Length: 245
Image 1 (cartoon, rainbow, N blue to C red):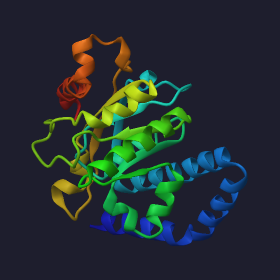
Image 2: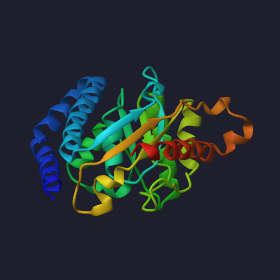
Image 3: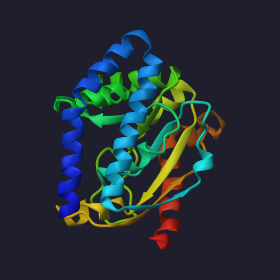
């Protein structure tokens, strides 16, 4: 319970104390958007790293050499915990936005920083707006910003190591932008908090980055169902790494 309270204080403290920082970032963005992207990235990576340290999480990272450093990518990962965002974001080598549910856009201060970090808000109840979010993601990728999606569409509350079906629509961002897809398998993040809410406990997790997938290099049939193809890659990594927990 103590860890939970410390993390809550850190999050609230950052959102409140960072109000003047957010204003400075806004001004910087008016004159140098690239500098703003990099500075916002480093600020939030620092805060996320602190929060992960407060939880006592121990992270084993595999395959990080597979992440291209010189081009934006579409990250696709399984999703079991709010901490999936933290453990992946602290390792991104370049500005990266996440696809978040529309409801998060209403949260004061947090949504401001999310926009600074190129996050996009998906309205799953409106097909037209959902398509626009995908097109916005394509533009981000073409402009050098990586995008991370959780193609299960929601947090998976099922058995550890299982996956919900990957939704094919989000993969259009990669096919339309012509960027690599980097599959990510994350083991055991739900055990940080969600598995025994509200207590946070010291936990060991494993995160593995698969080799980049280039959609146009796949056989035609696999290109039609690239979500299922990437799901199989993620599932294989999850199964393999379950013995490391």
